[in-house]
Amino acid sequence: MSTARTRVALALSATAITALALAGCASSDPLSGDGGAGDQPSESSAIVIGSQAYYSNEIIAEIYAQALEAADFEVERNFNIGQRDAYIPSLEDGSIDLFPEYTGNLLQFFEPETTATTPDDVYAALQDALPDGLTVLDQSTATDQDSYNVTADFAAENSLTTIGDLAGIDGLVLGGAPELEERPYGPAGLKSVYGVDVAFSATGDTTVDELVAGNIQVANVYSADPLIKTKDLVTLDDPEGLFLASNVVPVVSTDIAGEIEDVINAVSAALTPEGLVSLNVQSTTDEMSPQDIAAAWLSENGLG
Image (cartoon, rainbow, N blue to C red; front, side, top):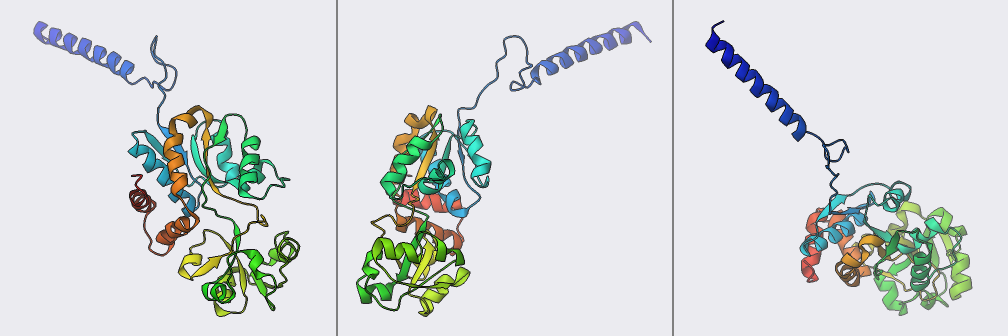
């Protein structure tokens, strides 16, 4: 090999070695903890929002996310996680910062023997029951819980607005899942709390159909079920707290609660029981995406 070629080869080898050394430095993972001297792991400032694997919960989580983004917060979505056993540990260890929850059900998760039932009592008890590092922001009036429903025609004919208004009406048949017959808010609870006498029919998945057909007069339906709107049902108010209240509530890390409370509390204030049912109808009937549903709702409520 000529002297000239030898010099070129040596120069190229030196360049390659330098490039590899630089590449090795550049490829060090800053999150791995094995970077060069003085390197520190970087942490994202994004607010991580989670949701259950439930379309209604995901819609609320997406509303939180878009509301925060509109207020110039950086957001990371971690949706469709599953049920409480799956995501509560992530809330407790701080890997999720914000989650839409339901007051009564969450309270029972931490305090299975709770005797609180009304919205205010449940909310207060939940604040005490939450583990260190977690708190709740304002609860919404929107709920997703057991409720008693009648058809709009039946409500009008009998001037019904509350469960207690059923007292004195003869021949009432209550429909619901088979286990409702033995639940404390079933026939025995209706009698002891409101003085309402009912027979019981185990209607299961056909409860709303049986109600519309007139085979039962009162139906146990979850309060955010889209069928309440699409079948023109009336949910009877429960002033005595027969049912454990489960209002929509944001669970949040105490570290960021003060930063985001104005934005998220405004969402909670605007989210009504009827509004939540409408959101669910847009998902199940209109087949809109959670992103489109959230954007439209925020715009309609002046929060987008």
